[in-house]
Image 1 (cartoon, rainbow, N blue to C red):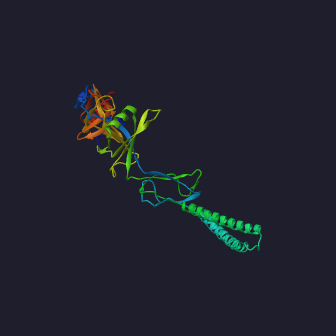
Image 2 (image 1 turned 45 degrees about the vertical axis):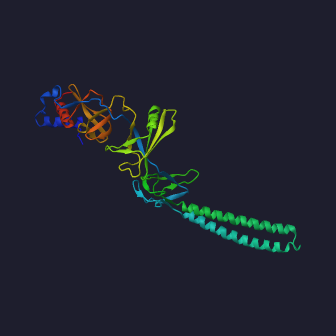
Image 3 (image 1 turned 120 degrees about the vertical axis):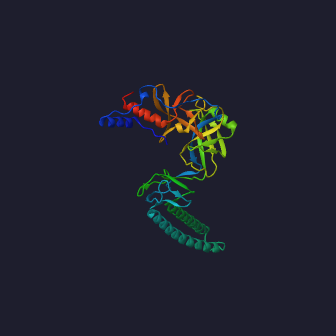
Length: 363
């Protein structure tokens, strides 16, 4: 990683030197044109590819919601934990659900006793009704009581099944192997079920990933004709998409088309939410200023910042770049540099020159 020394550091260095009774050593050329080895950026033939930003997402991802009213009793897994299918993700207190299940069982017992009695009574009436020992009205009443008792028994059994389901809902399990990506609740929190179920926990599978992007209409049409695309990772790897889908509709507000690239199973180094670049044949890069590349050794990397020191006359400045794929010792520049500009070949030397210049009070 190439060091980038901010102005604050250079100012502190200058103050320290003055406090010691001296002045910072300044190269003779620090007040004029910098004596730095430079490279002139030239437009190359390019790779004939376009590069666009995309986001990695999981094919299988779910946000699990509460299906019953309860209080969170346990959350065995935190964000980032790997879980297997069927593992418990959320456990609720089930006191109310158990009480409802016991009440439903009692209702079943009472309804079954009533149905047994009504069934026996109906059979007696059915046996003697043809001989005329009971009236038709009495027979029909016995039949109605038997049917009513059977309906009440069915309703009680359904209530028991519903109570059992509510009890099952007090344990939320992983629907597939994956990684916990977010927790929406905490232990002790009361949650609500339908009709407005509360979100509990999110999980995503890493087994199958894809890349989603939105491209301008003309670019999407070029990709549709090509039928092939690759994904470029930060470390320069190129992963060919196993399947490419260009959606047949465009967003009327942005006039962009959604594109989806299915990645091969087990694509290493990619995770949901990561930003990557799509590469596919289709002419010059989308930056519009020609395809240029710079030596990897000339790049400065500071966290998320990637740039170069641009030399313009007697001025040296750090400029952020948008980098594409890296091949060998050269990196493709998607944005930030134009052909003809000069950059410092040694970013360490450029940083030292800037420190010395600012320490001497030069602008």
